[in-house]
Image 1 (spheres, rainbow, N blue to C red):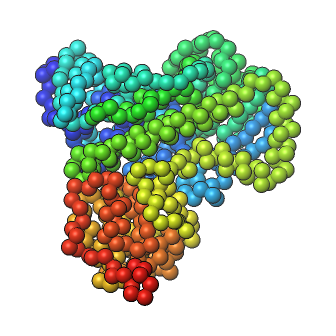
Image 2 (cartoon, rainbow, N blue to C red; image 1 turned 90 degrees about the vertical axis):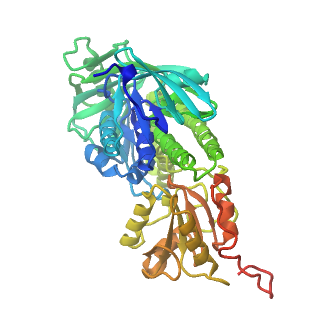
Length: 572
């Protein structure tokens, strides 16, 4: 084999540093849209241990769009409860309640990060992307048309690579972030311990457990593998470092077992750990996530507590958000300014994440010595008052699930008309309550969201002079077919006049989406609503697409605007 420096390499359109969940998601979505991707990672091979184990509903929706959700579900355990104990007394069991946050995945999937990465590696491999292990990014220099990157192989050889775009998904100690001069801002640090181990006790593995000993708190998360748990100790006795395999002799398992026994009020035996890690985390993030043709995502952009299991989920959402925009720009379907919305949308979410994880950290560790006395009193009220318990559950789920994250203030979200029903611009299209819709229509809608393109939904009917809605939709389908899927929802397969119809018997789906005849909704490739309106006109569609800067505007000669009615001056 030739030395690394002499290896031939076609010019990639995007080079990604880091083959963890975030880098793999970015690579998958870019390759799925037809871009040439090169994916490198400084590690010698895939990780053997799992930091992240919680995959929340919004990420499962994203996996559905990517086509990998079934493989993920097959490897994980679905969790829908959180149970709290203090000094042997059960305080409360909070059962998941997603009634106010409709989703096809009303649970958290407990799946090791190693399993998550295995599914994603297989998916990117099917798209022709090979991961180059042992390849370290050591330098970068931007110019007007691209980025020149220096890579170092395991043999010490170097390559100078030209790429149009670079994405740094290379973790908390990101080289890309350092080379860009982006500073992680924030303060505070805590030292916790993670352990993966078999546990023997008489409590069922149908919930996450939080156990307070009187002076500190621990957490237990059940894996799909029977009898195996992720343990989190917020006050480790001493730095035991990191280990792989069994045969520990430092008493870590015995101490964990004793703490859990005291907190849960029953005998708990912790077997030999497969992996433990004592680590110190900080709460910090960058002020911007783009510098010219270079981007950062995931831990390269923000580091924080694992208390609510948000890190990997947030990074995957960032990768998806960036990938569809980068593909549109690189393929000439949108203006480069579209990429500014990546930082504009994701930095505020990162800031909110730091606030929420800071709060979650305090609640999870809860070192207050009076907790054993106060907590039973507080949660006796929570147990008795159903509305209070429900409100608390929804508050916790809303913060963790990702289902309430939106882009209402994004420059891509156009609020030209009030939204009386259905998801508003900036909200998830799946926020619509779809349970009462026809199963075939619901499946067609889910399939549409898996399309790599944007989606324009038109409710059949509602024509005016020249049948404006259907005419505009037909023209848009013809002009923008490469990046826009146009679908017409109607009672019958032959929905009058509109392109690519799918049936919606009785209009239940249209009702859930808030679409009346002639009404329309533009959905971004990441499943968020960009714009909507009561009647599809050329001007309305142009206004919705203006922030994207599409390369080819809808022809003025096609589908003229409705003629004003003489009696009232209103548009038809």
